[in-house]
Image (cartoon, rainbow, N blue to C red):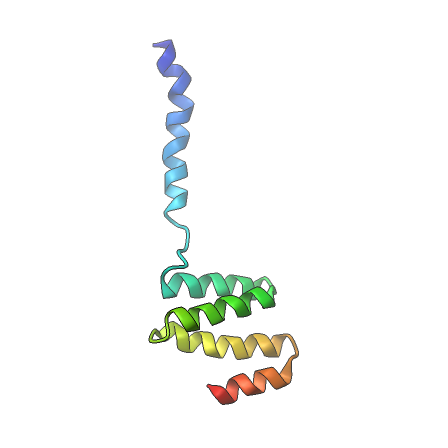
Length: 93
């Protein structure tokens, strides 16, 4: 009985850890990869956001998220005040 009590806290915490892991976004889906890129964009980590948006565009070219990623790339360039790159991205779109 005492051995079971030693493991009781572990048995209570373990299911909670499993529940947290299922809410992680997966970068192997267009939705997940795009939401990860959006998080970097919101955190003003623009270089990483550009990399992630480009990754969405290249890995999932026929997805609706590829189109959204192209526009987001232009927005990120604009936020960086890189206006020529933003213009080129908009024209390419």
